[in-house]
Image (tube, rainbow, N blue to C red; front, side, top):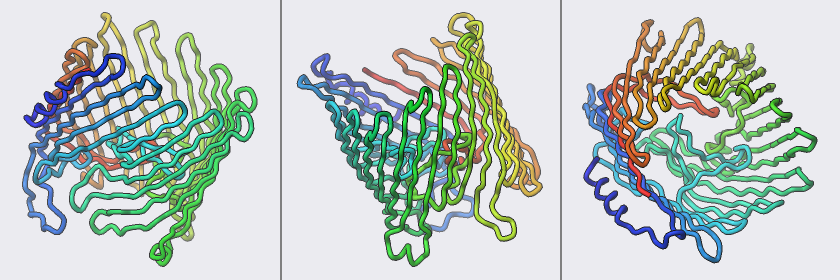
Length: 500
């Protein structure tokens, strides 16, 4: 642990817990040191980088967080939170080590709630409706930690929900020439017009406040949407529909002929005992305002094309209670991508299915899924997991993932196999093998990546973790969004502690 973080932890731990029963609080401290053999010194904007690059493999991150809640005798709760951070690299950009460590009050929040209304300030997440006008959520798979820093007021009643917010959103990487920042305001009103039927109206305005080097700023864009939903309108039957528009308000953007956008989404859901049936349809055209993420209507690992995508799918799931089994399947047809004269847009189908089993014979859980998507090019994905428990708190887990695709006559292949042996009271040991065959990047060769780690569980939820080896980089997708993660070579030491 770095001396600075140790002092912060000691200082905050000395704070007394005031009035037992009124205050509840806890502190967490996360420390990470890694020796990254692929890391080089960050090159500031405008500076010409050296030809070979300056190696800076030693990297660290320190994070100290405080969370507390006070309950007033007259009613209402006050929740406070703050996170202090010290870093010399960003985990979203690990192969660039900062020239000097950065320390900051990374996150803070204050929220007061009483009966149906609440007000908050600081850092918070927000999702309005189905994400048509605004979606700022954490996504651990994509290493996305964005929040809105500003203020929000909300009233939630039995038949009326009102919400208004404003602030700014920044990318996680805040280095010179890489940071991007947006100013955001939004509002929402949802009212029950008939029993079980709710009408929603939403709007947001997004404006670029700062952009990375060589990326042009985009002015104000106004997004609005209207939704109608119904829960249990007939036994087991529910529906949701939303339509939105995107308009550019600044003269410069209109001179650049940025096209207005529109989007429509609807679903119909039927539930009866263990049966779930879902029908979805979407049509999105030029509907990316930089802060929205609409329903995917497809497998969660796919990309949501907001410039142009149209799709319809049917999803079915059936669950048996004894034994605990779930079977599912999905089939859809999609039209995506830009229009190409003489060829049109990419069009095709996506199908997947699988099963999951939980606590068979009180010792075994398993799952498997397979999918085939052919929309412009073929992608095959399969995933499997097997966990067996023995000797009270011992477990052995095997996870497998395989992805194969073919574009323009070139084949790509990614495969992961993770084996983990764990004892709940002690910790875990794991070994990961990754395979990659990318003829464009690796000039026709295959490559294997091996890594391993061990985790020791301590008291009160604390742990220490050591891992090392090589990790494959590449595109990772979750919830319709994708990022490209760089590869890693080296070792990591991590620790987590908490006080209550």
